[in-house]
Amino acid sequence: MSKLDLANLPHTLRSVHTRPLFTMRLDVRPIISIGNTPGLNRRVGIVPAGEFEGERLSGQVLDGGNDWQVVRTDGSTTLDARLVLKTNDDALITMTYMGVRHGPADVMGSLERGEAVDASAYYFRTNPMFETADPRYDFLNRIVAVGIGHRLAGGPVYSIFELL
Image (cartoon, rainbow, N blue to C red; front, side):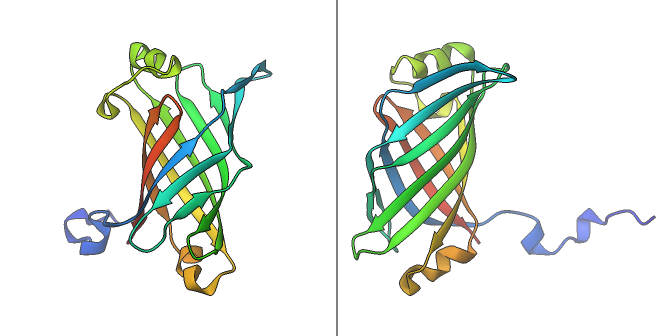
């Protein structure tokens, strides 16, 4: 078995490069706590609205999105979100993402109470994927993105980047 030659990896395999896609703010209704179901603590966030803005696309988040969350025994929250975006030029785009949010217990407690917390005090990352039938935004069907989130009292704000 040969040993992987890390010193001679191609440049494209040595680091991650991104390009800003958009910043998004979501309104979220009060969390619906389903409770401790077998194996997990389930809750659901309903997204009635939001907005996104970037160099290549901007618009509104349509009513009806949701985020099915699991609060794990280690205090982390996993996300499983589904949204419909409507661009300013009327294209419809689905956005789905999985993610994780975690940090020190006191910081996470402050977030849960809707208190202001410095975004650098906790970890909040997502991996958005997109689908659209609109040819103007077809490039979204073939990219992988990453998101960095910050939870505010009324909902999260995300900076979304295309992985190059």
